[in-house]
Length: 210
Ligand code: SF4
Image 1: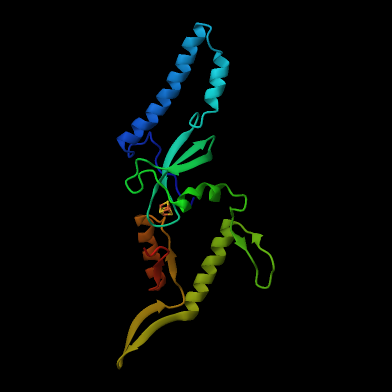
Image 2: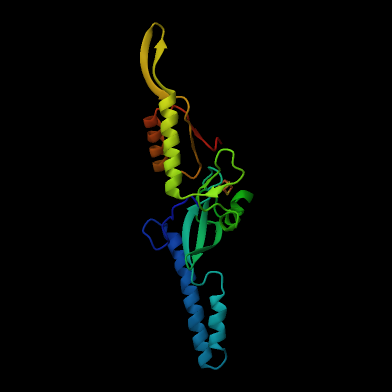
């Protein structure tokens, strides 16, 4: 997930009904354990066995985060469940105004894209003429990209253009384009636009033209 973690349910910006849902789940677990202890007093239940069973429940010892599907620009809401800092499920968010819990087939397949052993976790580079990719560091990737942008901009820079008989300053390059994505936030898009204009390109596009 290009994705930053969104607030967990204990945070202030989470809708109240979401908080109540999360609390009721926790309460339910507490009640279950409490009830187990009570029953054990009457020698009816093996407390250890009941606690062990609770541990294996899907929602025991988890934290939930809200996030959004990153496949298209519909912005369907999802709930990410994390145990021991590891993502264990991604499901449609029933409290989300866009999708009310439902996900299309792409959204439903988001978890496997996260868990796939074939997922790239570091930048990769294939040298000119090479037949294989090699892992490189993020610093190396940023350095290579910035050098290429600089070189492309410098060699294709258009300072002036003719408008009729007059030469007017345009200060742009036609050799660089920017492509945004559905999961970018408004703030990211703002910075994206600003950076593109700063470099002198007019070509700013978006991945989803719905
Ligand atoms: S890919 Fe499907 S689930 Fe994801 S945002 Fe688009 S419509 Fe929603």
